[in-house]
Length: 445
Image 1 (cartoon, rainbow, N blue to C red):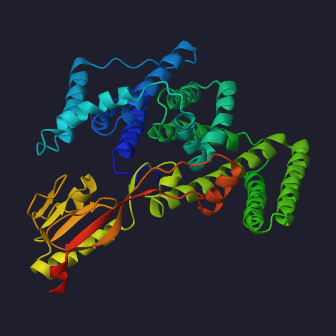
Image 2: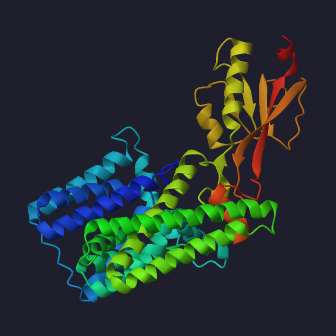
Image 3: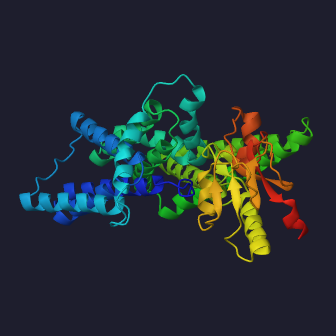
């Protein structure tokens, strides 16, 4: 949900990476050719999507090498027959070429697909900017708290369990976390870390349910529901405290209620652990998983559907402004009023923007340039908000928001708690604004 609202191929690249991993894993286990063909198709798809797909391939390769070197019993890849390998290569190349060129409609797409590798390599580097280093990790904490917190717990379990697949997922998860350091500022790596982290947590959850001891299943789920209720009650009172504390700093009653609830939960957990530690640990873990997944889903839902163009969310650098549809609609109405057509308004834009070129792609009379040609008197002119307009005719202007620029986020609970709980930010979003000028005599007519 978080990745899908951005206009790039990162979501498709991560899907291709996950499909490639599953297919290779199934081919390793069963040796059936169809799994090799599916892996080849996923490879061809991923090579045309986004640079993060190369990160998925690199971390998968590193995880595989680490699993073999650690002696975890990683199975060897079956040797494919010559004909099978040839068909798989054709599938990978055919898929990549067809998607890169949009099935022959855009030959230049081959160059764009080739640039993905160069762009991915250029993302490596050592930077002294703390925000660039911490940004992707903060994204993981903010939008996937279950993966960040319980993933570390699952790593400890996988190390003690020693299962081959568990160790492979552990190495893959650790490799993706290392990518956050060697490619500072690349947000897509945070989403990449979610894939192995979630798979590892799934394995850990399965083992937790199976190792509940001799207790029946209803006791596990009942205790999980009890601890989930205590977590929810504690969060509700903490939210009330943050809201009330902003108005009255001396009011701490809700904070004390939160402390009492958490102390009660801890006392219940200790009491139950004395009689059945496995059941207690499993129920606390399942309650924590459900609680963190609920928080993560709420944050991703809000970002994907409400704040997709909010640059204070740490995920978005530059976004279109909410007033851009109003600008587009104003130009259409002016064109209809002046020329009796929605696409014949003569407009000169001194603002070079891919966004404007896209929304006005059907307007043949709209032109772009650094300055208005001498002696020209177009029906309308679009300029930056701080630029003057010197033309022979009189023009009347109105300003609109075009882009929302990157807004720095302060680090600290005082600033971030309102954002996490109420989606409120204390910083303002800087805007890039433009002015739409219309020739005055046209308005009088």
